[in-house]
Image (cartoon, rainbow, N blue to C red; front, side, top):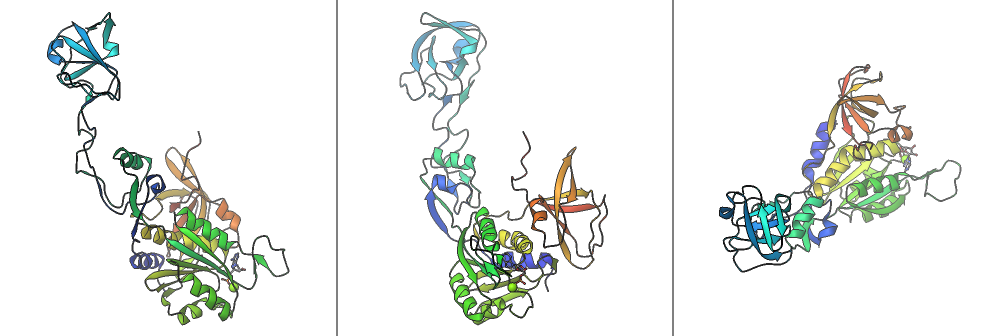
Length: 404
Ligand code: AMP
Ligand code: MG
């Protein structure tokens, strides 16, 4: 049975980034660039003014001087005539520097009246000019493959006139719940039946990674039903199943996957919760069989599936940030397996403190709602005491935003 770290490494080593597709630039937000993007031209394209003011020849302005106004250049216009000695051209931010001028004097440092402008201070060559190519040079690899596209990257792409961007394809993820006890949300409750919450929960988790969930509904605890649904699921890039992977009488998921020529890589991981998790490959595509318990299925998704989906979509950083926190509660733990403990975090004077988010039994979904971190407690560790340090993965829904 692999350890937590071994299982995650096996999974990440078995998946590769999917191919590229071209999408409209706005649709590329949050996605990962599949090819280098090189600058087709200099940025800025030409010397231009960083301020509203007067373009001058700095040699005319070694001391306070009065210059004749020889023109006006708002942003969007250009001028071909050179600025003569003794003259200045009024310029607005972004306008090209007219030929002959080599500095800009901001409005605040000059007084204009009746076609003349008095320059009060000294002017140095280059003052308030943004030079051609100062930001980006033609041919420079401005966005390397693997870049996650934020609005700032979109801005750069847009400024080079890019209408389409090559990004890694979104992963198509089939989601299948299994169990005779399951009703779909909206169906009337019935004795012995529970509502299939895992399909929506896992699909939501899939969507949060940027991947595309495909809902396969419910397979019943018999081989025929499983065969039909699993075969359907194997057509996707990734298949996730929930439940039916323990050692119970009706836990047929692995058997049927085997019949369908799916190659099992491991079954069971030395973790709590989530021990029955199985991982398999079908023609190179990953198949995750997650435990049915809603807490276990979401936690194992978080630990194993999410990093794999992110890697397949070209991300190079696929793990949640890990912080060190001081426990505020005692927490029971048996030595033996890595435990995932749902914790609520507080920050004081730049330090993190963690409280148990509620009852740690995997039956309690509410504890996961109260958690903004998962403490990963090493296998060998026994009971934890208040004051102990723990490593915590940050899973806050708001990405760790601060209150205003
Ligand atoms: P199993 O892995 O089949 O033994 O299921 C473990 C537990 O998870 C049982 O209590 C199931 O009723 C529950 N469970 C299984 N599938 C789902 C599901 N799709 N939604 C909610 N709970 C489920
Ligand atoms: Mg079951």
